[in-house]
Length: 338
Image 1 (cartoon, rainbow, N blue to C red):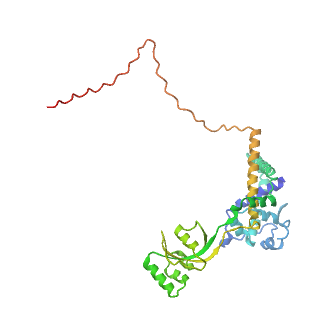
Image 2: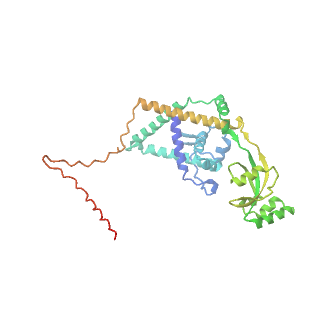
Image 3: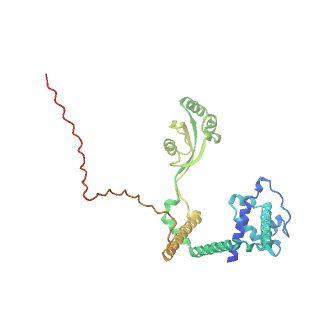
């Protein structure tokens, strides 16, 4: 078990080293020097594809197997994995794994284990592996059955509803004059698609005005109301005015509201349920651990209340100063009438 974990760490180191390698898709890769007893890239991708235990290279006493190459490939991000999932890419992975084994030999020759900090780093790696195994133990019993998936599907039908949608095309113009030209050409026999290409100011003109399928809530209200009121094949009899201008709308297809079948969604439902249950199990275990092993956070600064100004003390026998009375304004003498 621990060897498997160390192999994962080694694979992670290889993955990090690949971040500096060129993308083969760009066609700028350099051919690597031959490695000790390394098989050709063709052998990696073809001859041994059915045998993960097949030895791809030997470096000293160490063996690099096909499954090790695959593990590195599987740990790359999807975009980079796609670049390296070919003959040249597999060979590059193998070459880099050989390079890492050579550095391992060098490290032993230099006795780097005696360097300051080596033991501390090794202990840190060991502790990380222990944490990973502990979390795996906590989550290993989380299961989702087919019955669980079906029950969730039945209980939450709204999550799998597909709303009614229409596929519509439109011709957008800025004003009445342009719209009149569009309508005249349509009456004269021009197709809706050709009229859209000729007159429409919307980028969809390149597709004959086709906007694809949309459901309610995706278009501005005036446009949406008119489109959903039309029957399949109909064109709006009057221009529809929106904030963008004037539209003629044609509905090509309509899909009624439906519900995605269970077979179509069961994989994503299972994954969602597993993630949810694993999250709960993780949090529950943390709560139990915090109760069993009290945690005290000591590094945060505590807010202190502002100090109050000391009240002035009265000395014995000292008379209090009486508060001065505000002078009252003398009432003005009322003017006498002449």
